[in-house]
Structure formats: structure tokens, C-alpha cells
Length: 200
Image (cartoon, rainbow, N blue to C red; front, side, top):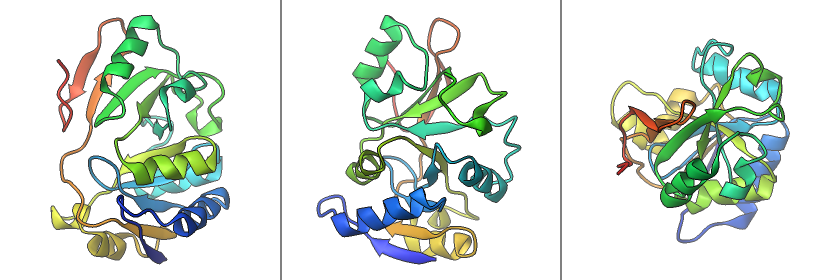
């Protein structure tokens, strides 16, 4: 496992390239978002997705999976939404929200059997730079730890995941409140987890 320091106000492109190369090779990285630190992998790599599911003990066929897109235009390749839902995303993204939509078939085998996908476009330049350089979404799920410090201090996150991830990005102390999850699969949006984002 390797720790790379990448700061939002001074993004090291060489480090971003190293992260992307690791993702393309099926690796797993810990990276910052606009909420908590997250585990990520190439969302088009089935084996990498299964690795993350194993790390977090997620029964992959039964667990909702979320992806990070670089912009709303990209979302249309992976999720189905109407004009009102498009306007909703435009109002709140980039931001600390996960919007759940019906999934489209372009997603890989690990998503099969699931009818939905969570969509994230975080307000974090590092996360967006990784997705843009990769050329397609990354799978995302929040890190876990025994207490608050273990989910927001990169050194302690690295200690937790030292044997299971390939890179930990150190972008300073992270936040402790996750994204707000909004279910958009049945007409009106419904907040199913209140997090950092406030939906009017």
C-alpha cells in the first residue's frame, strides 16, 4: 500500500496519473470526497468491484452500489431519469448528495440483478480529477472505522486498510458526515438518509 499526498488547492497531476493507472490495473484506492473519505475502484472492472464488496462485507447482489461521475451529462449513460430529475441534479450537483436512479445496462456484471444505481458528483476537485482522467466512473463507498478519527484521518485510514487497498490519498483531515441519499426511483424524490446535504 502507498500513501500519496494530494491537496485540493495544489493537485499533483503525476499522482493523479498514478492513481488512475492503479485503478485501470484493478486496484482499490482511498480518496477524499466532499463528505467522508471513500473506497473507490474502476466501476467498469467487475473483479475490482467484487474486491470492494469483500472488503466491506457487502453481499454484492443485495447491496446498492454507487458511482462517481465527472458531470451530469455522463450520468445519462448509466442511469435513467426524467426532465424533473435532471433539473433536481442540476440544482444540487456537484454536492454532498447520492441520487438513486434506475440503472441502465451499460454497467458491468456486478450490477446485474440490481435495478438501481447511486449517482455521486462530489464537490471535490481531487475525486473529479480522478474520474476525468480515468474516462469513466469509479465505484464509491464510504470508509469505515472504529471511531471518528479512523474515518477522517488518512494515516489511521491507511492503518485500517493497509492490507486491502493499493493507494490511500492523503488530502488532510476529512469530514465525518456522509452524503444525503435521495431515492428518485418512484416519482417524487425521497430522502432515505439525511447526511451533509440539505434538500429543499
